Image (cartoon, rainbow, N blue to C red; front, side):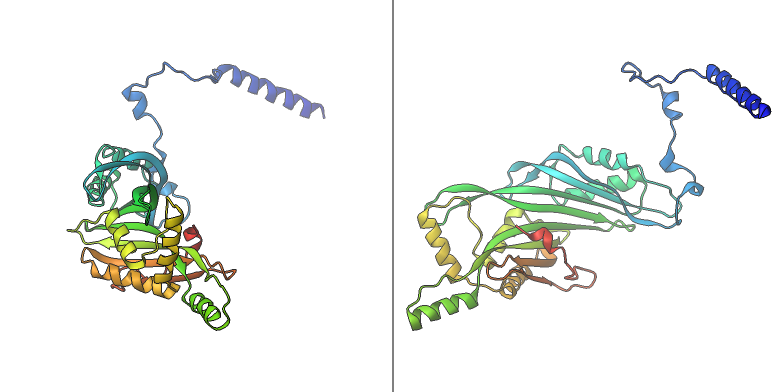
Length: 331
């Protein structure tokens, strides 16, 4: 027992002596500290450490990077005007099996080199080439998501209001420097049920009973790959959707507009199957669009479930009509 107490005291004395030799850690922010070049070169570079420091399997990673960093960007409108939007950016690169990590800050720094430019899907190729060079990767991807306003005129009163559309530009570049560009667009419309319309008319005709056919807010998500030599605007995609479906939801409405919208829904009743096929027909006509996928949802007012449909052009290596994130289409 005495020996143990003596050993404990000796250990405490040694630890106290060691502590006395070590300067106390400063718990303060040195506002006026400016690191010199030799100090910067001494900083640990963990993500570029030796491959032996990799945790887990030494396998390549297909995409790694950053998501949802935000900044204001200028985009080009259909009539060649400049409009500023708040954008959310996702940038990813591939990582080889023998590399521990990527310099994620470089992805942001590369993007900020172009922050004052006017953004189009075509500009993404220039950004991706620079990203490959700076991050030292074989493949890269960037997606810019934003809400895009279009001024809408009411059906009969000629009132005007801004409708906002969920949009995105996306670009990819592979190890052979092959660039692909994509544009995404969400279109919200009303879908009046053809069956309910006929049943309502039958009740009126045979029994003189007034009925209201059911209709509901609906959404189409349009995913397009654009031909490399072509350009397509958000307004172009909007026009294609309106031509196909006709019954876009309204912004500014007076009584005459509400009546007109009821007439419009009566003229263009549609099942989910009709909506997907009508959109397919219009997008398939546009030669600027290389490939497309269309996902629709009708938020049923009759049923306690929703109706969904997905269709694609069917090109080899293109969209596969495997969209399943219908919760994201709820509007």
